[in-house]
View (tube, rainbow, N blue to C red):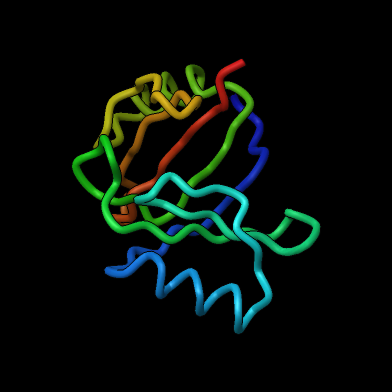
Length: 117
């Protein structure tokens, strides 16, 4: 079993710059990550976060939530053992995370990741 370290909702948007402006100006959030196709915004403490995404850079569909865990390999083995639908296989991404996506019983796509050391 893994330990969850962070949960971040992911909203799909058509215009990343416009959406970012709404969240920063209206809610006072600040940009903490920007890859050009996904932006993560946070409060001043960095504890409350939301990501805005146009289209995922390497996956076949956008996730609805991102869950950072302490051991993504164990989480992947657990998902496979339970027979859940793996939408995006476990892989190392060029931006420094190891991740996979699965679909839950309600159809939500969950991005499970750990930051690479």
